[in-house]
Length: 423
Image (cartoon, rainbow, N blue to C red; front, side):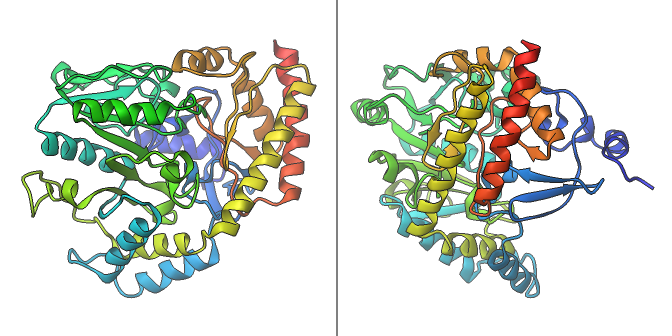
């Protein structure tokens, strides 16, 4: 009988490449054997050996209320009893599109898909079709999913695997992709269809844009008639009720959403004005489709998750994140280890670096010093699960209590002492 993490990983590697279905889960960048989650509830996950972890992965931000949130679970249960997929329009996909549009000024229409990668891939095709242009500009360290066009110089799992792109992506797929540094406004030309940006970079750790940066991107796109795309797969409905537009005051032309809008089930979306979205089939010439798009169970979960996210919920998320940031900073630096613990709203980052992180090169230097891996395993042994890679952010949820945070801080001081001893 398979009962240990090691045994499950060995078994998984016989039938799944690398033993995982997403590379960062393999622990390649931190070393060791991944824990296999058997169940989860609230702020916690339990592995197959029965060990409980205070979980700051939270499905990389999808579980904003914590795992198995009762209203979401009830919505899933009720929806599943009515059938899990139809291949036909449903009322709930209309309701979810309306809910997204009601929260984000500028969003007039929404197309639902099944993942953040699918949303970004489709949004790029839409932008090219709407403008009649070919060139895509993106920022180094920003991750927009694993589609060929956008994989160049990506953060997150790509960087965690030590890759700058991917084998199997032909030169032609990225011939019209231009990668620029995040700390400078690029000079665009008349061939640029779209400038894609994570409004707050959350796939190379957590890096805020410089003051006025997003507004300058907006102005540069306007100057040449390019579209501005906000990839809000992470920041959407986590950073604020209205996402990065509410946070920054800058309105893009196209949005990508994911994570929170699925309530923990596979879901993505891309959105824009009625004018831009009219380019999509069946109205326009830009083709996009998906058998499971607008899935009735996923839309039920998403609606239930969003219904719980009012102003008080965001205030509480920020309070929890602020407490965690302050505590981690004190615990790690108190052990004599240099660290940067940035916070943007309810998002928290962690870099083992002497100076604040501004660019992907800065983030890579911090990741390459090996200190995160020591800290990660020190925390994991103490029952606290951070992402198994130094390019991810920390996701406190509404389920994390002050007791959880205090225990995390105490463990962080001990784990940081191990880092100090290893330097």
